[in-house]
Length: 69
Image (tube, rainbow, N blue to C red; front, side, top):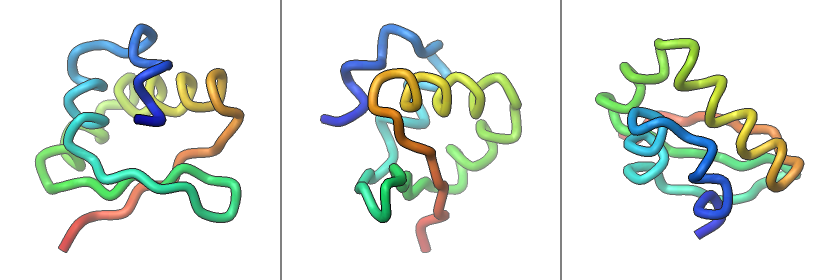
């Protein structure tokens, strides 16, 4: 999985978001499709920042979030 190489940089809460998300690369960005519970975790700035920094450092990609329907 794309994010596994960066998982050492992530806290438990950040890993919960990433593990539950569907991921795909689109237009040079990593798109994470997240459920409502993960969306609530992303309201904590630290969780969002950890995920975005780990992806940027590991893959050089920007992260975009979409909510699942």
